[in-house]
Image 1 (cartoon, one colour):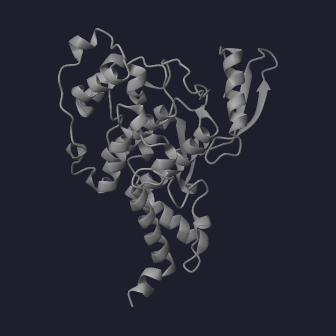
Image 2 (cartoon, rainbow, N blue to C red):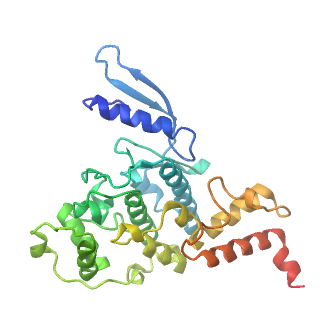
Image 3 (cartoon, rainbow, N blue to C red):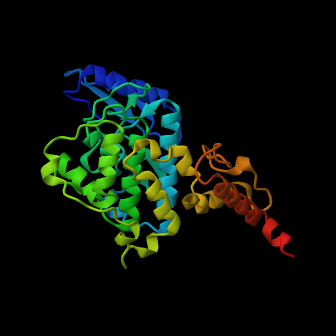
Length: 317
């Protein structure tokens, strides 16, 4: 990628971030930085990914494919967040997929930033369709949960076959589109809770809308991609209040991804020796204490292990 007319400070930050994330799961690998001998313009050299354009690929993905690739994306986000870095531009264009090798890479860390609690950040980040309500409401003290809103938008667009899911004509209309789904009363509760002053023009365009059920977006063309656990995960991600959204690690432990964990455990350890260490790198066999649906997750993963080892079958004899 050639970085023409980009501030030197921004390029240095991106390089520093990529070096901090080097070797992380599904993070695009920075191989080298070179300069054009004539213009002295820097160019970042990355690993090659035989990507298929998402508008073509997403139409072909099965229910399991979607779960698999979203889990792979969560591994990248979980690692990034654990290293203190917000991506701030999660969207299909920045998720490269080599479908033949089932390889995913999270790319374009140009808007990424190191997170410091309590610090205010520029809200002019992320792409419109994937901007969280905090950005659209000009709330600067956001955090990693911004990436989880964008991830939720991707989940919604993939399972409902609606790209993008929130299709605003501009940043103001974008928040209106969100409010038409999540409800205007809930939006007002959110801005009041965080003492946010909404732009006055919203009083003319926002209107009044009740919260819609996710089932409303299911139809004959997408019903094979939608499950109860998919809607439950979506509901825990697309929340106005950024503090209520699942973290990347919590999302990885959601029942929606049990089939992926089961497949990985079966492939890695074989049918006779499935252990917690056989789960995918970055995945914990048990959720963090106090996390959502802790008991449900624990029981679900136990069922996976028993089925893989034949324990459940032996126990029923």
